[in-house]
Image (tube, rainbow, N blue to C red):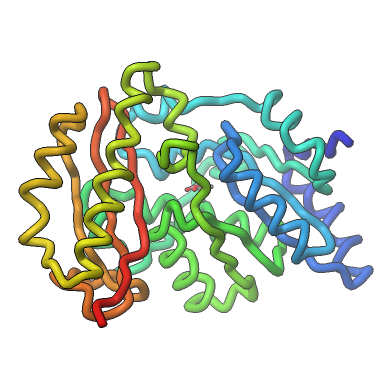
Length: 284
Ligand code: PAF
């Protein structure tokens, strides 16, 4: 079933008002489009937990710190709507830039602490852009539940923080990363890889899995980094932004897996920035 595509806030509000009046819960899946099975797993979870599901598609200029990256970002609205048909979502909200950031828009939402590290340290303003648009999407959709992938684990923690801090009344639901057969985390950016770069990109997950296993057996990051970075370079990764282990909740940098933690990486494959994170077993 084709869901209605809503392009204005007025249309969206009219629809959600009726649902709330009927006592129905609303789940939102915020996306920038170019939907893949990772997004679709969020939609499936949203369908399980909410009475009504809205998928939002908006390539948010405020979260791109590089104009070329914004321009290159895949835009596939027609295909996205087709992929959503089998889920029978209740609405697809596709606002344009003027709808989201009308003339004179001057508000910025900034989450301190969590955003100074990892992608926040390498992409100036990125998380302010995410926090601002997500806050708007939560209030525009009047969502009760919102679904985010663990693939963007730092983003998930930032969104959880802002939803709590601003009393937005939205329960943020984290969903596991969905991977290709060779382990590469699904991402809209994978579409930008050539066939050759795509086949090499799975090395990121291979290296991280090996590191996580060794960390779980008591190795330190210092022990593992020289070999890991050499393997990534051999596979064709350039410019590793970070390869770090951090605690789950506060994202504090740690050297050994003495408490619940994840391994985080961001690196460039043929000019495409790929990120990933995986759970690290705590050393017994
Ligand atoms: O994860 C994304 O696709 C985006 O950062 C989000 C949450 C849709 C905000 O633009």
